[in-house]
Image 1 (cartoon, rainbow, N blue to C red):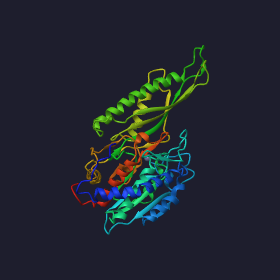
Image 2: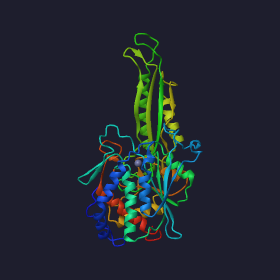
Image 3: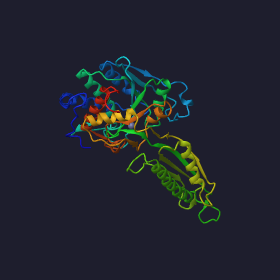
Length: 425
Ligand SMILES: [Zn+2]
């Protein structure tokens, strides 16, 4: 993304020079902060390790915070995601920076967990060179924790009070299902609007796709390849994969009908991520297990996607009819989309425009995150926004361009400084 030369417009709450000179003075410190945070490995279930660091940052901003364990009833909630760490519940960190009397209540949600770093040498010994930070979480999404802190610090240093009564939820388990955010909503959600910070390359999304994990067990008949009675489950799996490709086309058609993406191809991928079956060259395997994810868009919901999956593999021609069993485990993230004309969406777009950054119409994000919970369970307007490129997340050499962190800080500071009533919405 080209950021140089973007100049705030005259109606911005602060001048370009004010931000630029502040950033020049603070850049090294802010980069250092990101390096420090990345160096605390917070792969689930070790998220809480970063709370002393985070708490100190909030305190320095004059905010209050507390560590908030999940409610007892969390595992009974239908949206709860069972993980290998579910027996060891971890807390979120909830912070508050009170606003002026009667200020609207805004929540910033950001996850503290990062994905594992197998094969990524130095993932937790981050480095900074040539304007970029490399390390696990540099893009997804410790950069956005640092961005939120920097935006608040900038406003404080300039003597500009945020226009909101601010709550910040730093949550666990986003990468493995979202039970941290679910816990925070069940504990209490008093916000009127929510911004979920994720690596969107500074785009503003008014929805995200859904994702459902499932398994297809294909049952064959064991036997010697020279005998007559066997049936290779792997042959059946090939048919099932073909059927899942058909499902992918179907999901894509349904998504196009909604046109939430404009010109972009809809991210309705059905990905078979693992195949497990068979033991020996000369034997018919009696079982083959496929593990897959299906990405989908509103108005489809999980129940509808399950029906489509079962229809696809249930309709295989003989001898495979009735030989496929579908189960569900792991990710079950519903999709969501709110009206792109919602004031929250427009105001964030306005902040981006005021900061002189290229505007695009709001779209639906091609990845899923915790934002759905706010829309679906709490009925709140929620958008997804942040620095960092999704293409650089989760992989080896995960990285962030510091120029993008600066631009994101500017947009967020502008948004937070501007009272909702101001300007066109
Ligand atoms: Zn993320």
